[in-house]
Image (cartoon, rainbow, N blue to C red; front, side, top):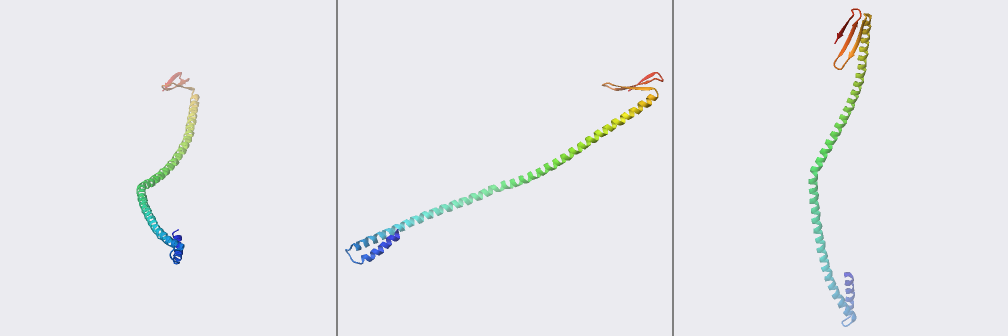
Amino acid sequence: AAQDVVNRARKGHFEWMKGPGTSAHSVAIETAATANATSADVSVAFDRQMAMVQSQYEQLQRIQNDLKLDESRFHKDLLPIQKELDATAQQLAKARESKKNLEKQLQDTVEVIRQLEVKKEMLTERVCGATATAEQRRAQKLGALGITQVKFHDESRSTTLISMSILGTICILI
């Protein structure tokens, strides 16, 4: 817009040279005055715009500095939390490994207990079998002598009554 005014002023300048009293002369003077006024207005507007841009630039600089300061504080505050998080993660990994080892140890112990229970049952059966065999042999030997063996069990004691037909007596053994 300012350039248009200047161009019109130049054009009017040549018309102005045709002499005073002509309409071209009046228009040329008017255009030159408008161009000077417009040029001053443009200069003032430019200065205002530059001042506004400078103000915005300074405001952006303050904001940028504030953001840098906030970022620095954030990292400073975050550092101990990050260290604690890392330490906690390591402790958690160790605890999980310990749990895994303990679970394995528990499984191994459960298997050992199962095997020992099977072995105990087998040995108990063998003891019962050996005891029954020994009782049978004893009964056979006593029977050959004519002695009868009867067992009584009560809550307080176990009593064996042996009847000896040869002697005609009864003995109580405790």
